[in-house]
Length: 328
Length: 145
Image (cartoon, rainbow over all chains, first blue to last red; front, side):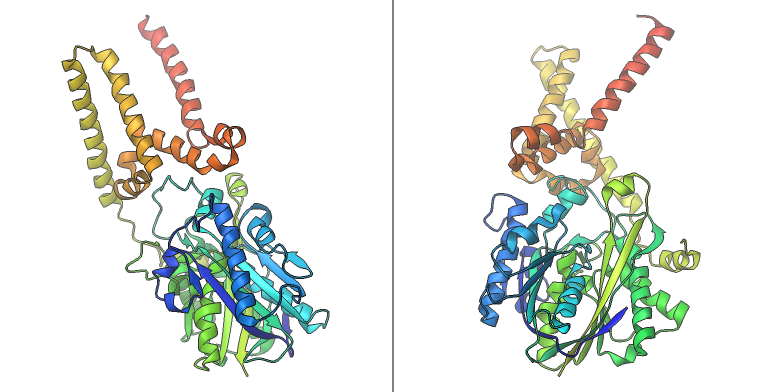
């Protein structure tokens, strides 16, 4: 399922982050950062909504568009009923599509928006994603103040909101093509090893992308995976080279790039829907605009993990969507 | 679909968990908690309280300290450092309860605090009572009153 686009451009992005990302290596590329996880709100859920609102305001400011001119908003996050996206984007746009693709939501949203734009149903769209370390801890793991000891393979949910403005008006960065992922089940059971659970989905989507487009790894200046973390990244590279003889040279993982893994206590790296978006919309977008990178393939990985299903002895399924960004 | 080849390659990239180190830290920190408990009991004995009464008082003191530490926001950092040494004693129980409370305080006293307070510790209480009942019965049958 690969779609080619002739008329979709990534015009502007906005990124808002929390304190951990602020202390990471990409700090200078973010539009706004907070020192506190509450962002001046009473609860973490409200803080995440605030992040989404902030990112939308920032995007309007940077791109100079009016919130009534936006045709479509595609948003997703990790909260139940994707409340951060729905509450946060209230009042913006003439249509809203809520999506859930776990950590792959960032690219899934872009693919949906790009397909709408390419088919000329709409002229522009905003794709937004958010996650908050504390809200996802509360929802998926233990209470936030519990501080349960976790293994090194566990990942650390990034805090922030990121949005991008896709349009059919020509600009520097083009959305060139995208490959939609499918659900992969490799009988993974460990909720503290998401990198291992998600790597098969990334491999599947990458192979299908290469197969359907006829491209090889050399075609891209950079191939990025979403949030596999340090261990998942190694599994991904190793399995591709051993099983399929594909050597990835220009490859990195957003989860590894977002934090300083030596200094910050974030275990195997960042995760969450906003992880891949924060890295792509800030640092990568900047590099594309400066033409230091020309072709980038982003593979956003998501673990379709539910504590309920895990307690009922079901596997952790995963999914991965790919999008190719090109400089004109 | 289970892919044995994938499992083999993936298992080559496992994290090295410092299990022995963690166990030593937990052993020492848990031991220190036990020692502090004994000191409290000795102090209470000094005040003329007998041992049977001193033990629950010591436990209450620990519950109070742990809950206060959780509420003030530093106990979770201690747990990250000292691991199960703080989670296994009564301090862990108090911490689990208070942290659940803190998480749901915004949802109000009924739907928040009330229904989520024992989210983690409910199992401990339930199976604690059940096993106390069973073992108490066994002891009664074997040893008499």
